[in-house]
Amino acid sequence: MSKKVPKEQYEKTLSYRMRQWYEGEKDPFLNTVEMKPQPEFKEDKAVIEKRESERKSLYEHIYDMEHNAKVRTFRKLYRVFSVIFCIALVLVLLTMVSYLPTIGEVSNPVNNEVSRRYIQNGLQETGAVNIVTGMILDYRAFDTLGESHVLFIATCTVLILLRVDKKKAKGGQEDAEENDRVHEPKNDIILQTVARILVPPIIIFGIYVILGGHLGPGGGFSGGAVIGAGLILYLNAFGFVKTERFFTAKTYKWMSFCALACYALSKCYSFYTGANHIKSVIPLGTPGAILSSGLILILNICVGIVVAGTMYTFYVMFRKGGH
Amino acid sequence: MLEWIRFLAGAALLVFGLGIFIVELIGVYRFKYVLNRMHAAAMGDTLGIGFSLMGLILMNGLNFTSLKLFFVIVFLWFSSPASSHLIARLEVTTDEEPEKHYRRVELKKLEAELTAREEMESREA
Image (tube, rainbow over all chains, first blue to last red; front, side, top):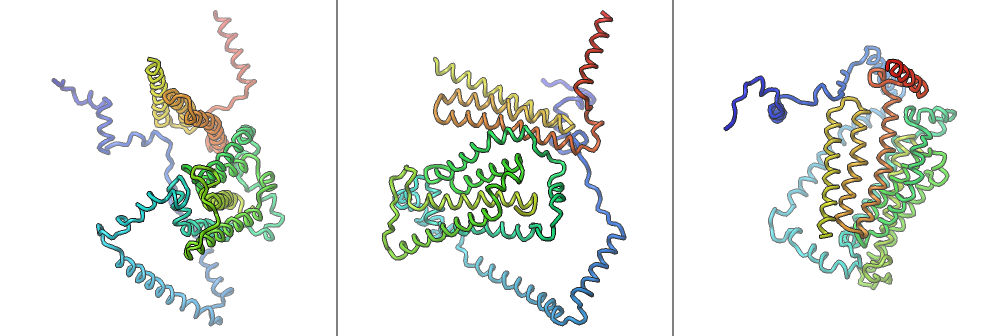
């Protein structure tokens, strides 16, 4: 038998507040947790005027629109071609969508023999105990090559956007050093001690993950990310002067180039031999040993180098704008 | 029998660790200032995870997996306090109204204050 409780007493109980929260009537964290409302977007009249006049002077003095017929035609053609390009892209994509197989058909890629073959013959054909690694670095290695290049191209794009011109910033070296994280600690002794202890195990663990990619969970992408994180920790603790002794933009460039070229060349070889039914001279080895599964170990190392360098370079770009 | 004792000890450690996690969660949501909330959160990241993983090690027995779990504990006990320290330092340097949130005292002044208070109390007694 439940007891009838007066309403004021009921409103003080936990269950009533739970119910309020559940039904969305009251947010218990509103006004108790620190919150700052976003300031409203306001602009001075002077700022608007300045922007407008700058835009006007850009068109009048730099492009010289009235006399420069070339720029005028280019701008008109640009608009026309951008519309045409968008329509063409939409058409191409829509046509491709209409060719997609219908859901639930027997001959769909989900139902065909590819996945069964990966599971049944993967170990003999690739030599990798880890089927996933065998898939991404042997059957579908071309795809992974593209992914590594995507990382490299992303770094190049960030470089174009964020790099600080060294010639223009001459004399501003101290400025840059001061701008580099005014509030954040420099030479923090706690961080330095922790980094001195933790960075070597982190990097060794990353190498272990890369080298064990064909034997268990792991591989180039995850191991490279671990190594990159270790490098970033080292940089945060000891500053640019110490990291630039062994890792500069030049090192990154050559490392990425060598890794990608090595990947592309070794994969070219295996595609060539495979497509022409020539026996590859690279032995598959005994499954389970570290030096086994042919090219997969080398490809893993290449991918790991690219990923580690990319992570570190991204961080450096966003913090300082260049190595 | 020994198996049972091991299991029960592991389970007790695990439950204790989970309890610390609950305390941490309550603290994170109840406290209002960042440093107080961080104190609560850091407690769970070190003590709570330490007890939970220790319980798992006990249940698992001594093998390679438990060695890995032990390394996870060591790693977290190094990294979590260091990161909390950095966040706290950033908060202290960028706080706009520090006198509202905390009181800054020098150690010598605090010592003098405490000894003065003790003298007062002894005189009263």
